[in-house]
Image 1 (cartoon, rainbow, N blue to C red):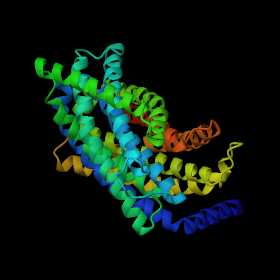
Image 2: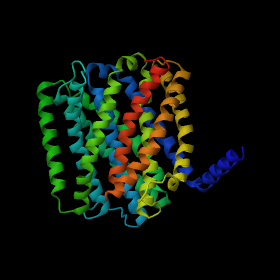
Image 3: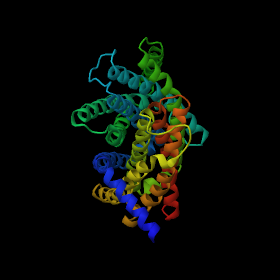
Image 4: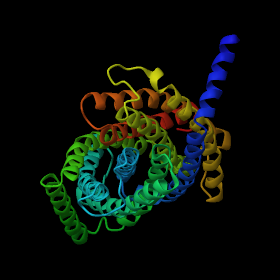
Length: 410
């Protein structure tokens, strides 16, 4: 008992020291949860589109992750610039903000095209029956992704400017809000773009235009004389492709259980907010560790979780109420939207089972990923968040499917 009392006392002490971060993180996660639930409602309501376009569900997790990853890394880089005192709210391509935005758009365009090709390959390789063609994948991914990317970038810059004026710590606020914003605008954008698919002449013409635009954006950025733009694009491509592959596998895991999601579309409501919350918590943790590495507050020479104990406590304190609220809210909103649910208790059980395992993985992956990239001489702001969130997409998707199997739903 004395040991338990000591642990509890230390836990409370950390929460008191991190009271401001806890308030900011809780508010950001609440906003993110609400936005992601709306995205989930949209996803749960378009099961007819998912059945009409076999394989589309393979594309949704990586494209959702891409929006959150690009917005999250953009926010993380801007947060580091704010901490370092180098941030200026100007859109000039000679400034940090302008080059970051240009890089984000180029990476988004190029990788939306790459993800479409990878999704088509995965759909064929994993035996998705009657999967849509590569031109359909390209148009849906690039057109839908471009619409969403513009919106997410605008939201990220708005948060950065607002945070600068109000003295917020962007590490605690940006990742949840940007990730959720990505979900909120991406699912409807993909649905809108899906209406351009399965129209032979139009779809083929748009696919070629998308491919050329993506290649021009990437090549132009890599040959740019602006060093920040060039470096961000060069460092981002490989890690985002890796992240996309991981997220596509997550999409395949969900696609393979499409029958269960069609039978209980309320469960499909869980997917965007659950993955968003897992990614947001991982983003908060990784951003805080990244900032501490840049400021010399964490020693990268050896792996010591004790050095980030306060960050772990903060994330744990944010995670439990967030996942409980998610289970309750998803079931309630599903009922309001008329979506069939396996039951209220079952919905909460799925979230808690999947959330516990995903958060445990997030702790290890977030810390090791951030410190390892720093030790390799790479910028964790560009590498750690995409790796962490994409890995959590896969683990989170598998965890949800496993939880559904455990409670007898799938």
